[in-house]
Image (cartoon, helix red, strand yellow):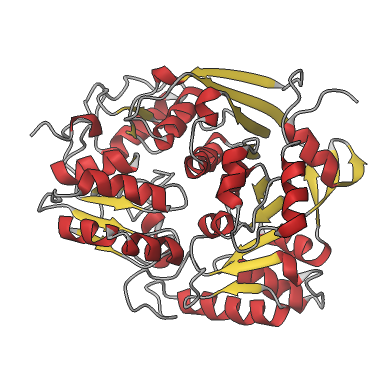
Length: 467
C-alpha cells in the first residue's frame, strides 16, 4: 500500500463507498448537536417520518443561545432563545439522544464538553452543525462542521456524502517562548496563510512545537483552522492524548481501553507520506499576537503597527477594516484604550486557559472603566475552577464570573457589547458586528486580554510587571 497521511488513514477506515468524482460516502461515529441548530435538525427529521438511526451516537448540549448569568433558566435575552431551548430539549428526548441540559453537570460549549467527556476519541469521525468542530481533531479524530440538512442525513443514516479534501501539513518546529500561547500561534498561522489559506484542505499540524503543546492547547490551535477555511485540522495522537483521555466518562475501559490504545498508536502519517501542500513555520518567530482588523488574518504582534496594506487583502477590504475599527495605517496597537475584555469561547475557556489567566491576574485589578467578563467553557470547568479558587481571583480583580456557555463570543444569545466599544477578546473571530452592532473586537490570548484589562488599554503581557 502507498504511504498514507493520517487523514487518509481515517478516511479509508470510514469509507463506505467511493461515489466517484472525489466524493465518498463516509461512516459517522459521533454526532454532536447544540440548541441553535440541533433542534432544527432533529425536528425536521421527525417531521419527515424518519428516526435517529443510532441514538447512542448522538449528544446534545445547550450552549449557544443560553444566557450565562447566575441563576439562569430557559428564559434568555434572545427573543426566540427559549423556543430554541425547549424545542431542542423535547426533540432530543423524543429521539433518545444524550442531552446535557442546563442543569446537567456535563453541560457546556459543545467543543469543550466533547473532549472532556471523551465523546471524541482518536480515530473516530465526528460531525456537528458548527464551524469550529475541527477543534476536536486535536485528539486525532476526523471532525468537521456541517449544516443542519447534513445533520439530518447523518442522524438518519450514520453516514454522509463528503467531497474528499486535499491534504496540507503545517510543521512547526523549534521552541515557543514561554510568553507565547497556542492562541498566539494560531493567529500567527492565520496571519501568514490568510483566511483562505487552507481552503478545501485537511490540515495536519506536526513538528516539535506542536508535540510540546498540552492537549488543551492543541485544541486551541485546531479550533482556528476554520479561520483558514480548512475542511478540518488534525494532530496525531500520542501519549499526552492517551493520558488526557484516560478515565473520562465515555472512554473505553478494561480490555477495550488496551485495544483502543494499541490502535491509537497506529494513527500517524507515514514518514514518506506525501501531502498536497507543505508549510514550515519556526516557532521562534512567534510573539504575542493581536488582531487589528475584521478578519483573523489581520493580526500582528501586539507591539506592532497596523500595516499600510494587508498583503493578503485587497485595498477595499483593508480600508473597510480600518474604518470599522477606527484605526489608521501605521498606528500602534499598544496603548489603544479598551472598553471591555472577554475570556471565553470554544477557543480559550478550558481550565488551563483560566488557570493561566488567573496567575497573571492574581493580586491585580481591572482598570475602573473596563467591563471584564469570564465565561467558563463548561459546567465542569466552572466547578473545577471554583474548587481551586480561581473564581475568587477573577471576581476580586473585577471580572464578572458566569455560567458556562458561548456567551458573547457572538451575540446570538441576546447579549452584546456596545456600538464602537473596543473589546479585547479570547474568541476566534473579529468579524463586523460579531460581538454586537458596530462593536470593535481585537482577538488575542488570555494573557493579552488580562494584561489589557488591567492596563485599560491594549497591553503586552510580557510587560505586565512594568508598573
